[in-house]
Length: 482
Image (tube, rainbow, N blue to C red):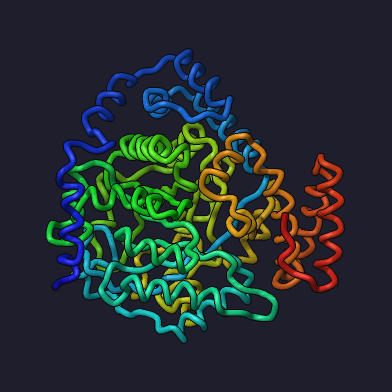
């Protein structure tokens, strides 16, 4: 039995569907309908968005098609306001760990595609995973996303073993406290095993929601060639009790306007089917150059920096209570401009080459990377900069470990009380970082930022808990959380 044959029987469930929740023609017609929205149309949608409720597709289409500079500025201001109201003034930090770049797929835009002979293929051994994770911990990382190619070598048992291995690594009193997964769409039986391995968020990107483009990018005869098998990956995870899922699209494969609508329809589908539980996060990476991959050099639908800012703000306005992840694909200047528009998570100190934490120079290992990074600064550099942007770096994993996920998380997030957990935990985890890992310069700037945010805590009971917890951290205690 081939790797593809393993799933063919399960594809039938989706082949028998008359339709799914993505209707290409409907999306295109909605965008066409609102080609020239008035200022009144835009402000009507912004008035609704200010109530922190999810927008409908027609409303999002109005924001997408808006070209008026005055109301685009108003969109940006509201996106920033909503992010702060719902998530507080903090940015959550993580770093990816690439476990394998062996892949059975042949996606036109991917440096890992099977036909690319310029990539040095390897899969980390368990001992090598130990080495990589130890380096990450000793740089200050507390949360990661594990990334795998789609290969028989990284089957479900290997993935589960690697998750357990990541959690087992300690360095002093520190460890990785949350391991999310970015891997191939899996069957329900495989997903049950992931749940037993204490997976964090299960993340699968559709890449593009546009069917014709999807077929063009993902050759038939590969697992990734099946559109609906990928489209319903999060459904299968939720079906077996993994209640924390994430979605995303790779911007630049097709018109960004269509992809934003696709992400919204995906969110609506999950919320309607799973009692209000939509994606915990949405990612929106842009295509970046990749070694041996000519398609990435000049993609037809490349997204400009201005359109990128706009689409991020629109996502925040459309799904205000969902986390938005901005990756180190983007250059530092772009990150500085986009973060205020609604971003709640970023990666930093990132190495995307397999074995990159141990072996890369300047955070780069080109012949083992899926694409080129735009931001190769150290974690410490980005933490220091974030402290100067009126945002508080956070390494918090408390909600996951306290069971505030799925329906519970959405209830809290939608009521805008997340900041009552997020800000105290951000303060405490940043203090840990400053005590254990920060440079002298970052520690000085970070301590000033802590004082500012402690003073801003409105609840006296919470403030007292935070101040007492900071003293405990200074005495050597770790992992204190609300």
